[in-house]
Length: 86
Image (cartoon, rainbow, N blue to C red; front, side):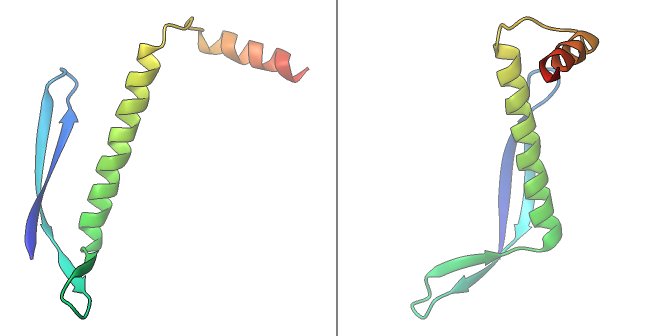
């Protein structure tokens, strides 16, 4: 069975981009013909995982930007971490 997957991803200019993908799903059913599992081609599964990871990265970035902590240069952060280890 074919169905479509629709993902909304923010683009770099802040506009949501809809990604449509046709999935080639197969269902495993029980003795009463109730769907119990889904089988996908591995390429489609990998695309779903990749999209989920990208969304997770975007959310982490957005959460980090929302925090109003002091921004440290990388070198200063390393220096401060070194002081903690001493």
